[in-house]
Image (cartoon, rainbow, N blue to C red; front, side):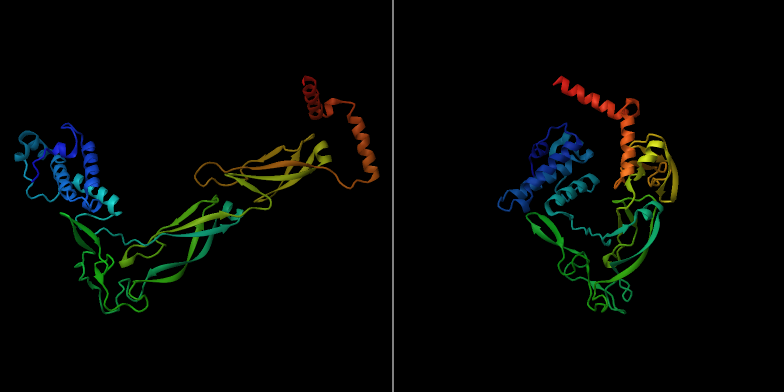
Length: 372
């Protein structure tokens, strides 16, 4: 038994907090673990000293006894590791860092849950806005029906692995400490199949394509995922199945662009309708809608149709449809049409009030050149 002061062993003050004590022990354990210091013959003893010190100081009653009576106040001759939660937690943390997982006391830690799967689904904007139910075919590992997932031929059963006696792990001595490793004979299952099932070849799972119906809610967008619980791969050794995640991608649309809850489109408006006012039809996902074009409409003006956008999948009001006016310049004019436009142009030049944007722009240009 070490006679060194436990506080000195861990390098802490006597009024050290529980959190700092745990941190100090973690640093010592990482520093002196035998597996990390195979070339240092003193490492096993230092690791044992740190473990013994923490075993005492992490227990409030033992710590009080040690503070009053020293080593005589505690009995560490049969040191096995603290049975309390804190000591086991810190060993789990440390050995997770050193070995990437595992348990220093040889307890099996294995998850039989099947793997999650991901399926990419491409849908139209119309289906994304309205919602749709689609059927998909997914290849996945499913539990073998003949052996019910056991991997053993019907009428037989897996037997206990002789290499680990059913523990799933074998322990090797590293200095004074015993380290658990996955049994190679049974790959951690603790069982060996002597008479494997033929359809699954003893794996307990077979690959099949299954058809599923996926309900796509109204309002989904590119990047959204839909989770189908338990529709992933079946778990090994009769473990629970994983989940299937359906990744959504919405195709571009010929008419509409989407920005969250809102839809956008452009509508060409004739020069005459933009000047005199008129009425045009614009498309929505629910059909055509007539809107009035006010006199003197300019390119870029937005016409908003409330509630003609997309449902808010995460709550909130439905979006709008915003239609942007694009004034179309006439092409391939006849001589008579050109003469009429020239006559109109000559008439418009007589009054700045009829072309305020042009007048304002030319005033700014004139001011710019005069100031430079």
